[in-house]
Image 1 (cartoon, rainbow, N blue to C red):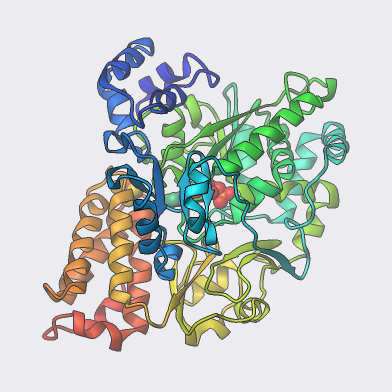
Image 2 (image 1 turned 90 degrees about the vertical axis):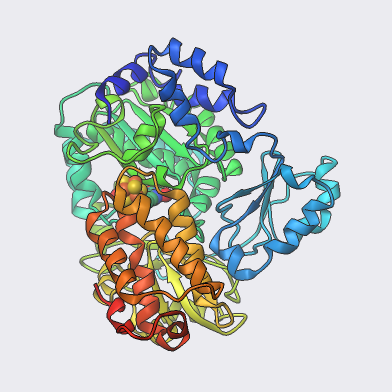
Length: 559
Ligand SMILES: Cc1cc2nc3c(=O)[nH]c(=O)nc-3n(C[C@H](O)[C@H](O)[C@H](O)COP(=O)(O)O)c2cc1C
Ligand code: SF4
């Protein structure tokens, strides 16, 4: 990271942020013009290379985005469902081909056929009415099952404003240290993938010197197949804001910043409305409920880059820098946004805090397993009989979830759980796993953010893996060589194998995966080999014809 750039970007404060201004410049034409980028750079006393480098990073700001009118979802769930070529064909009847872009993913994994037009997302049967949508037809809300197996916390009805007021009164009457101790007692671990205890992170930030401090809600849910944060943003916004305010109170932070992905326009609108409600009711501002505690909210509209979900890339993004991953230490809790102490947490993690406030840390710790307390949201894709958002107590058998969802619509050979960096779980393992961090890690998989994608028996895995690397290469931030070059080389290897052009040399692939695992700066490059190794271990017969036979292919399944 550049400390100078952080400081220069922070000079105008969060309200007039460089990234937001970059985004606005691209709104009319789909990309800012070079003159505008130069003027913006001058106003922030930075080089044009900085504004140009940042703008050209994002899918929805780079010059290739110019003139795009409609976007097709290219996420894995829509890919597995096989719906998108029909969507493209239907859109081509109405839009010139060069005006059709792609987005990944719109979070409509439960019904597929997803596309984005004029600030709204559509899915399911909507494509059949494309002409009326273009004529100005109203937004079509999607519907999916929301249920719980065991205790429901995050899927209860959202807090009305009166309940928020009562809860905030309780916050203000608490001693911040005691409240923090209660959060630590709960054992709540981060839900964004890594499972780090939030209590520890808040404690680091509380102890860190620096002013102002920031609570960032990571709402960049980029894992294709995941839409559980989208559910919380759209249907539980008050719960989330309350959670952020609690985190602010215990750390002494003044700002709650929500970084929400561009692919979720409805979520942005719902959260913006909830923030307005909070301000109007005196629940946010310089003096929350006329107390000495001030806490303000700000939403940042992302512009299409998966890596911005990684917390340090996200911080660079808000600062308007090219969103490359930062080297740690320093950790954000010590030196984060504009070099100030910053907590970055996932939507689901923050949304669990109000329950800890109101029912106590011990209560929360009593749910789930000792090492993975609480409940977890899962998002199930359209291949389940009853797709939707499932809240389960940690420790719930995976098979119980599959049964509750009515099984699958079609024969399924594997589940891809936890996003692109998550494990590929073959059907024979479904009955052996429970939904918690430990069960997945011990079996050689990863719970991650817990999106669940079904891979149909008819889907050739070689194509699936080629697409996975296409995604990984496109989304690499490019900061470190193993990932920048390695994901691209792997994309080429798998694509050539899939088209029959060239078989994969197992030794070469093993070297490549090892280099990615051991040499990458962040979990993007470091994590992508996991599903590949799982696939090679469990689908040997299917994949063997795509590998050269003179070397030992089975060695590639283990690092
Ligand atoms: C490539 C990559 C993408 C990530 N995407 C997300 C994301 O979309 N949402 C998220 O909360 N965390 C994401 N993370 C994890 C964050 O870096 C960070 O660990 C998380 O926001 C911390 O919050 P938590 O402790 O509440 O999970 C990602 C990490 C990597 C390496
Ligand atoms: S592993 Fe990939 S995404 Fe992560 S820092 Fe390196 S290049 Fe960037």
